Length: 101
Image (cartoon, rainbow, N blue to C red; front, side, top):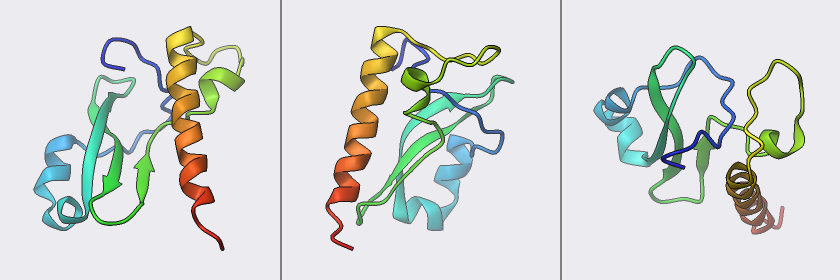
């Protein structure tokens, strides 16, 4: 994940890592997990998780690289990208299944 763009980001409003850490209320609740780079070269927090609860936030679409084949979009269909994104999707589904509601 450090050496290959395995996630598909389609967002313009990511928060800078420094701004994330400087926001005391946000930083008290969430831990940044990874950063990504947008089309303009801006680095932003790409995923975070709650320090106390099973809450996660991501600015990528784990389903897109292995399910979308739309001309003009930059989906990474490599084996590495597919494996990473499938594991992320499986993780999110497993977390959701823990809730009996």
